[in-house]
Image (cartoon, rainbow, N blue to C red; front, side, top):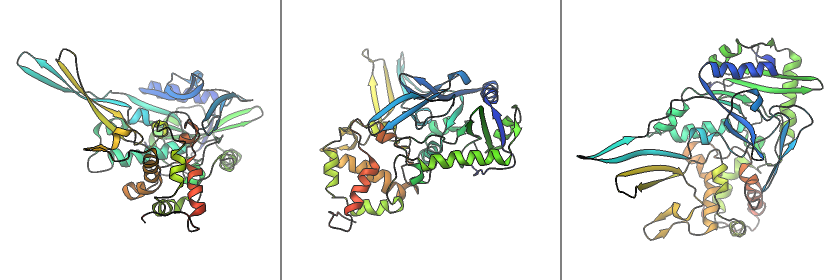
Length: 387
């Protein structure tokens, strides 16, 4: 997958819907399994798809705090929606991984490790915020001294077809976090959907040699200045339509460190259900726990790694009890890690502004609203904790 940053360049091209179908078929022909958006169970989700007909043509979403619904658009847009309930994390940092299995034999026992599935995956319609999230998880899970071998194996041979956002969700704030709505790196090909009257085309930009080779196989025409300008206008309209904004994002790490005992933590805890929805839908949260199970006949045992959350009581359990026993302490841990101490660990914010945690919180807790409330009283009589 490409690492360089791409700009609107001389190798940009324009394709139509038939070109998108040809793109997907070319990826299948090269041995890739397509993972992309489709409509299922009242939502647009990422799952295995087979081609153009599986894409959510003519659908959009309406998102607000604790609210998500699908609506029909007035056109046949293929990518006219915002962040999906799921992120690409579930295909790279799997929800459940069997680490090993032990089985009794006649002369002892045998241990086998779980084989990694040999799948070449193509991610279809990855957005800028999610590509930034993948880059963050790359640093966390394979960039340190002890990389996760399973994650590293799944990251190999991935082809990314990105999409520049043409529709901002009601809870998006990627502009504040400087992570979108235009993709800038981490892709092989990037599409911008251009719909105007009878026109329905896609500007295609190249982000890697593999992307260039695939584009060369497609029916296309060279992009002109008007095409590039139209694509830039799509992104500009989306940037201007963000549903949320993170206040003073560059100042947030220090702001939260100064306000560890702010009364807002108690106020949000009164609403928080500790359900862990925010961490499950977050594209950068990476916490896991390990479970050991033994069969009823005692002949086999397994060790399984599963997603976990800092919102669960047992996650911070040590001898004597949980370090973070209250909803107040657990919410503070999550938000201060995401927006503050993540910088110290990994060199970036842990938030990419996708808004999923706001949309899928059952009580509509809004991370941008919580930061704004703390910032409003900072230095003006607001309670402060240890710097």
